[in-house]
Image (tube, rainbow, N blue to C red):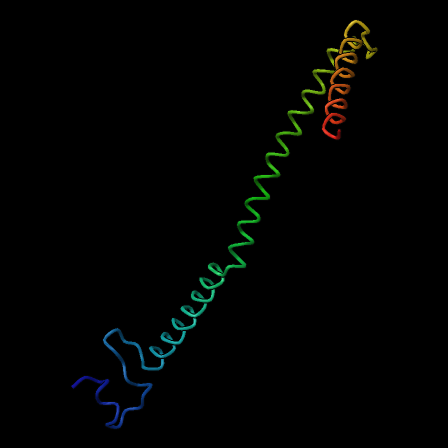
Length: 123
């Protein structure tokens, strides 16, 4: 007869040992600890799959991607402005009329075309 079976025959519950040498109290404490760890794990999993958590994670990913794209666009625009500035000014930073005047004329022509197209749509 095993010692666990002899609990009722004069031995206290704490003095009974299993094959690994653990007392019943140690086994029960281990079960309680494991049960608490399992409950914590289930709570964490429930939090991870909760719609609010998933929505927040998705929102953070989208915002991160948008911020990255905006940053790249800003850098590209800054480089473009610097190149344009270098083309339209000399080494001392003074405007080069032979390059500025055509740009201004083309820009003005584009604005006039846009304005006339808007006027035609209204009529």
